Image (tube, rainbow, N blue to C red; front, side, top):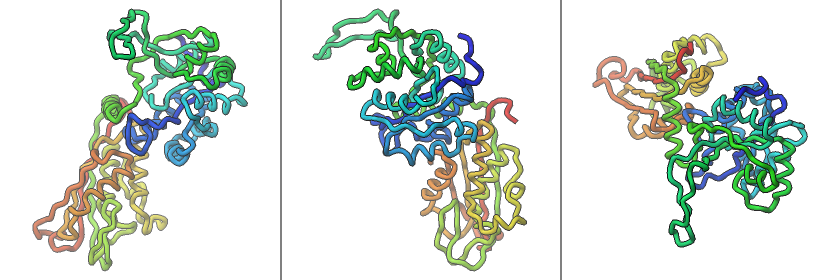
Length: 401
């Protein structure tokens, strides 16, 4: 298919994100889970905004998820935030949520609408373009691809009742594409009925729904296993693998606690520094800058600048992580070591890993923290200070410089 207009000015994109994700498990719905450092919903929005920079973007959320939604869109580029309308609130069913979203968009007078599952972050540029064109041509269309497995229809007892001819079967995806007025009227007419997707709503209203070529890579994240597969796939799609190292030292001074990796540890001294002297977080931050060949903490946050006096080191680390994201990359792994005689780091290791992972928006499994002594040798052995070393593995798109 050919491409749509270059901006999508007459297009609305409705992202349905009101589900609870019961098959995924856990307290956080799948659309707000982190995928290689970004919420799934954020990646989905970025995909549509890249192709349709003038389209209206509306997300349908569960009424209890406003805080999660705000956090998920916080790091979006300003131009994408400008495309977002206020979120619509979902209803008791998927059909209710779709209707609520369409009603919220109605005042914008858009010609066509693409309706997409938030949990499909791998929607491609080509598929979005094909969906827009299909909406213009047919008024109602869905992406689908041929079914390769034999499908069995079963009866109430679980016995095979029929074997449909798979040559006529298609596995349907989103974005489903419609003339806006057509699908809104169809939703209004179908109110109170239990229909499984927007195509079924259009069919129930008497419209013929066409199928255009889908994309098998446009996977839907349904289970925790799907998220792991998606993360591995995303990292594979960033083949430029870079490593960086970081090293930092801070001396002890009078105090009652040291901060390591954002965790305060009771001690009879504290670390001396212009900021909060978090030697571990500084090493991790410099390792990320090193992987990007992007200077060091001192070049981005000069100690001569009084605004950084006493600053929390997570400011520096979040900034380094954002530099990776701005270049379209992802942090694959962090490995850090603390060198000191005291305090003992082992009892606090898991808390430190969790805190660093939270700041970098990484799974804890991608953050390693170790501790060792220097066998009473050197300044660390004499308990004059603490040293920290870190390695960062960063993946970037090919040709990104």
